[in-house]
Image (cartoon, rainbow, N blue to C red; front, top):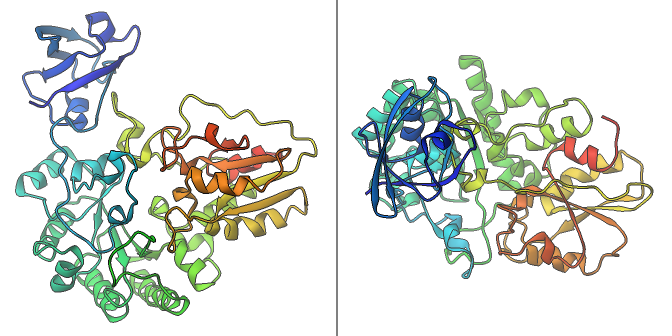
Amino acid sequence: MSTARVVDVHPGSPADLAGISIDDEILSLNGEVLRDVIRYQILTDEPNIDIALNRGGIAIDLQIDKRPGESLGVEVHSAVFDQIRTCDNHCEFCFIYQLPKGLRESLYLKDDDYRLSFLYGNFTTLTRFTEADLERVVTEGLSPLNVSIHATDPKIRNEMLRNRRGGPSLRWLKALLNHGVSIHGQLVICPEINSEMILEDTLCTIFEQYRSLRSLCVVPLGVSKHSKEKRMRPHTKEEAGNVINTVERWQQTFLRHEGRMLVHVADEYYLIAGREFPPTEHYDSFDMYEDGVGIVRTFEREFNGEVHEATNTAAGFFAWVDGAPSEGYRSIRNPGQTTTYRSKGNTPVGILTGEYGARTLSPLVASLDNNDIRIIPVKNKFFGGNVAVAGLLVGEDIARTLQSEPDDHRYLLPDVCLSQGKFLDGMTPADLPIQVEIIRTDGIALREALGMPS
């Protein structure tokens, strides 16, 4: 049975006044058995609620009257109450297959659930999508969704997903777009597999059949040292440059016909190719910020004081839904902790970040002309391969880097490498050999940490 377990009740809320308690199981709302927090939100927006509970084996029925749209005041244990729809693809490039053994179990879960795409921004391939799913997405307005496309040639997509439903499932992409559902698409480019002429063909098909996509992001393959797939390898500098060239040509085509560029490459491509990043106006509305598009230009603007509000990376359904748990990549980065900066003064500062982050931050820090502030790149030996982003830093590598650093400095660490206060390897900041200050991963937070004027 699908049940939502209550993990918190807000004092003075309608739920509290009605007598709902922590660990109660919600069996139904207004006679409907709940599948997920989406239905929970829709039903609890109603002014009159009949709620059936299970409290330690005892059935309890409550009637709650409240204002329309007023929060019920309950937090539940999960976003999905029935079974998460797992992924039955076997993509060579899937990063979950490249994780080392011994990490927490939740990291190895592969989902292909359109509900988690709507709730958290996860990418779905649509290979398990159905007519019933389409009806629900359309009628309940579950938009936007994120869809992994990779290639539009059916044979190539079948091959990449290792699933014979790979190519045919793109019919759902067309159906969703035809019904006005907002879709962010993604192409993970694997050298010699869906690059070069296959990429050209994919972008041509996007232009012909899927140009109503809200955005399309082209991202490079990430390869860890734990990958067992022989065909998977990082891009060369020349290959990265070719991807940029191809995308930039198509950007001009989309711009002429659609008034927007639609397709963008992730910032990582410019770092691999050793090229300058495009100007801010190049990025449309930064729709794919969370997928690595425009992060560098956004950070620069924040750090230079050109904007005074950080980019909201927790947008979407969970920015407002009552009772929604913080899970997935949107989880609370530094729960229950407010960073207290150590005395500024003339204390030297070390900014810990990944190798890509170091290349981004170095010119910004150099512009300050302050020898007491330096960038400390952390090499990711835990994952190895071409993994160099700050978001995949682990405690083990940070600890190793800090062992050779003086203990009388201030060390700043971006919260993007933490989830629920832990690194991917299970360590916490308290396990590090030197105290670090966790700061938000944006330019405004870095300015504040360095004591720069607002």
